[in-house]
Image (tube, rainbow, N blue to C red):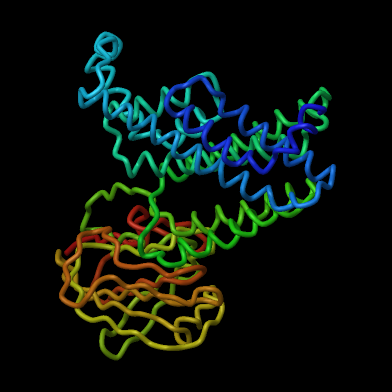
Length: 424
C-alpha cells in the first residue's frame, strides 16, 4: 500500500483526475474504468486508516466524480455509435460485420432484454461496455431507454466494485476474502437477475403514483446512507438485504402483469386477485336476491381490479367508513368502499355490483372509470392500494348458473371464472 500512501498527498485531485480519465475512456482511449474506480476506493480507504486531516469529506466527491464520469463516458460511446449510423463517421467494416438480419436480431434483443444485458456487460471489462454502448447508438436504441438502462446499471456496478474494494482492500490477497467477494458479487448478480426478470414480465401501473415512486425511494435512501456512513460491513449487508426486500415488495405491489383475457360472456370472471373468503346470499331492496362472492386481497396480491364481463357503468357510489380487517365479511358494511353498478352488454342483461373495500392497511381506493363508460370483459377499472377486499354481486332469481369456485380458492382477475350462466 506504499504507493497509495504516497498518493494520499494528492488525494484532493482524485475527483478531477477520475472524471477526466473516465471521459477519455468513453472516447475509446485505453483507460481502464475499473482501475479508476479501484484506485479511488483504495485512496479513500487509506485516508480513513491514516486519519489524514482535512480529507474526511473526500468519499462523496470521489463517488460523485465516478458516477458523473462513468455516465457521461457511456453517453459519449453511445453518441459515437449514432454518428456511425448517420454516416458522419465512416466505419465500412461494420457493413460486413452487421448484416441487416443481425442488426434486427440485436435490436430485438435489446428491446426485450436490454436491462439485463446492460447489467451483465457492466461487470465485464476489456471493452464489452463500450462495444454495447456504441452498438446501442448504432442500432438506434432510443436515448430514453438507453439512459434508463445505463444509469441504473452504472450505479449498481460502480457501487459494487467501489465498496467491495473499500471495505476489503487490505485483504484482497487473502484467498478466503477473494472467494467471499466473488460469492457476494454472484449473490448480488443473482438477486438483480431475479428482480429484472420479474420486472421485465410485469409492468408497473401508473395508478400507483405517487407511492410507486416515493415509497421505494425511502428504503433506497436509507441504503445509500448506510453505504456512505456505516463502517460495520456485517450490519450493512444484513440491513441492506432487508431494505432491498422491502423496496422490491413496494415495487412489486404495483405490478400490472400482462394477461390474455379469453372472451366468454357466459362467464363472470373474478374482478380481483386474492382468496375467496365467503360466498353468501344477500337481499337488496333495489335488486332483490343476490349472491355475494367476497375476495380478500393480501399485501402480496396484484391489486388491480377488472370488470367480470362486458358492461356499461351505470352508477358509481363512494362511501366513507372504517378500516376493519378486510377478511371479515362485516367489513363490507362498515368500511370505506366504492361500489360500481354495472349492466351486462350481453344476455342476460342483468345488473351486477362490484364493490371495492378498504382494509386495515389499504387506505386508498382508485377508480379510473366514469358513469356511462363501456368496458370489455377483463378491462381494468381501478385498484385498491395495499391489503383490501373486492366483492361481486349478481342476481340469482330465475337464473340458472354454476359456481366455478369455492371458499378458500385463489383467484386471478380476468382469468378465473367465478360464475357460469347455463342459459340466457
